[in-house]
Image 1 (cartoon, rainbow, N blue to C red):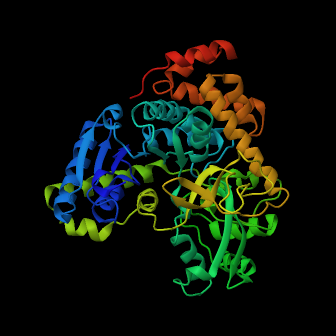
Image 2 (cartoon, rainbow, N blue to C red):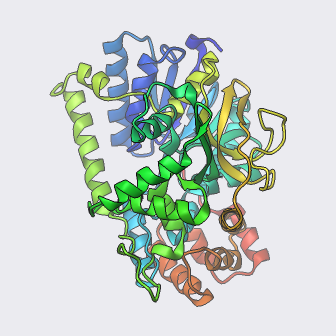
Length: 475
């Protein structure tokens, strides 16, 4: 796949986390320079700005990268080698609705985009679009890799695994290598560039991942890592930001409980009932703070102000290239194109291990959709062996996988009964009655985006399944 022939399509070019980074990478990364980069967005103002920024960046860098725009992804797909999904339906607005309504029923979500009612309803808003796009990828560019960057990553990945024939995997940037290794080395006061001496094995459902082993020059360093988090936890102060509050304390506490170290605690703490504030004996830290959607909205507004400054010339393009770097998805594309041998954490089924061909996590099934360190080449990701989950933690992984699987099937079938089952089994929900009530309130609050669901709320499974074919086109 020569550089001049490479085509990358980004659906959701106005993404808060990805749009600027992919523009940077298309000018700077070996293997991506000179590619065709097609940016897709349904907001014409956002699309026009991102295309202008991309073309200005290409001209400034002298990369030869060809930047185009499209408001219909179908027009962009022919000839694509990689299709990256990085979109959401009014992210901060609907996450605030999900989190605030759920909090009325004693369900406190500090992020609200993966587990609990927030994860279920975000999947309901986005998964139909993803499956629709996947079908178009199969039709227009069947050899392309479809890379999902939309949360809840595991739910979307399971949906694609079960209901699409496209070549696909899912991403989350919380374990971006080599940054993740450097963070642990820095915490222990070890040389941050001595990456080869650190062998760490991490696995789990996305956002519920744990370090099952870690060795530095052959020595087990998990006790030192736990102690470092314990020390930091004693010094911790409430910084007010919902996802960051008391993460060091919680990391140390969960490490002691499970015998494995959580590696994405800002999300993982949301997966467990321990921090909901319901216990008869209070935790030494307060219960979770509810996700601050207004903070995200402010950050998004600042992003667009910055883009306007680059486009207008108020800020020089040299500053753009100094400020930004490549991203998890663009680094992965580079490795697949150039074969540079780098490893990455990727969400995919627990099978086809790079060493022996079996399961990466020995005591979870082959189709368990997990975040795993993978070797990567043009043929896609193959996970490294991890070992086994400790008892207790293994069952929680399976519970979350079941909730995610049920969420997918409820959405595909438009089946309210499966939706109630998914939410009732969610670790944050206290009762069937709570699941029913939360679903009712969230449906009522989100009729504009869940219109097809609103009509199917009281349907039985067979009738609900029949409505799927008449769901509105969302792109």
